[in-house]
Length: 423
Image (cartoon, rainbow, N blue to C red; front, side, top):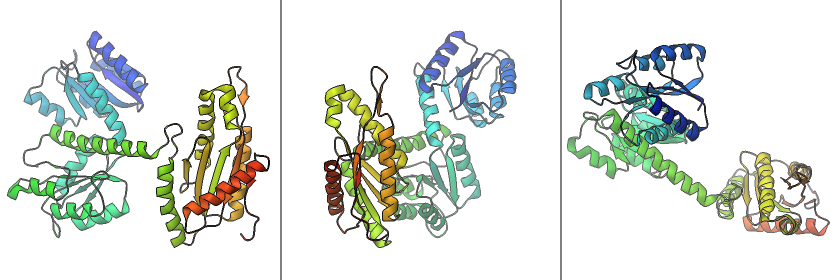
């Protein structure tokens, strides 16, 4: 998020909103009190605002005129209003705002901050809209664009399945029911054959509830459904947000289960699960897979001399360098206290050993922590390398581990591998 524009004529509410938003996002909030002040600021700071929070009623713009001016700049806009009549509500939604909230609600600022945070996350989320009506696809896409989602569309179920195969990062499918070739419920069933509910959400969006189609959507694997004939914009966004929040929460739980809490690297459990999959793929593609074991030299002495807090800094520093060195397909894990393991596909034996030597030298000359007297603490590592791919990941790890201990026995701060026989 870049800078945020706040337009509010109440001094008390303006100060409170400015303070809470700046604290929540650590960004500058520029506060104006009238439409005239807002015009001047937008002219000077063109393109610098990514979001805006506007009061519907201003001294020189009593009927929401400021909304049109701000939205014309392409700024994602939220509106505060003290008047929640149907007339005002319809007027606000007609201006394509991201959301509105009743100003007197004591939780209003917390709600807006949560909505702003959600929109920031939406920019990373891809949604597929399915329906044979161009008008339907345009209507749903526009609602999603306002909330900053990335959107793909498909005119029927067959096309939707092809797009899902092509774009594996799609998080949500919103589908009509009546379509040529395959109805929305059948599409749900086909999707669920490949994608579980904790990886991909589906919302059925039928025209009307003929034949209990809503219940059919749920039983076919949809997470939720909305009826086109009676939906409110608030309902649409609420159900979409609920699906996305659930997916994000499950994703965080899943990440927490496979990540090491100290370094953020993958943990031992993930390493063996994903490592065996990677080994099978490399065998199938006749590609080399190498296993690298790395251990911090004299780490117990670091803990005993400087304390475990400094020891943690050292481990994080090594983990950061391993992460920076890793290729896109590498698996890097912390599998013990000061022990790390890397699986890296591709490359020749000579390439892998040269990479390990470069990594060893980089670690040795990079301060892993600063001590209380500001003196840099340098550490070294020993590395064992197995470049002989085997049917057993455990055997490759055992070979790399044996070579790691050989490196330590040979004086530490060195890479140990078998003598080269072929490249």
